[in-house]
Length: 78
Image (cartoon, rainbow, N blue to C red; front, top):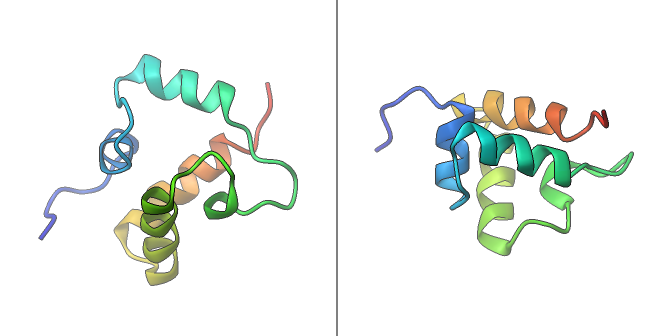
């Protein structure tokens, strides 16, 4: 069982991505969602990442807040 409060860093860890701030910033900068594309539908996720995102978002659990946060970051082009 996962007892820590989910954060963006922990989400990146769970997704198997580099989770230091510079890596998160670089990921957000280089992976933007097209208008109308839900985050779990983006083509830059592998099946495992997509399943994790979709399942926790549907459950509306603690992870869903961080998933929403990442979705917002990926929806704003600088």
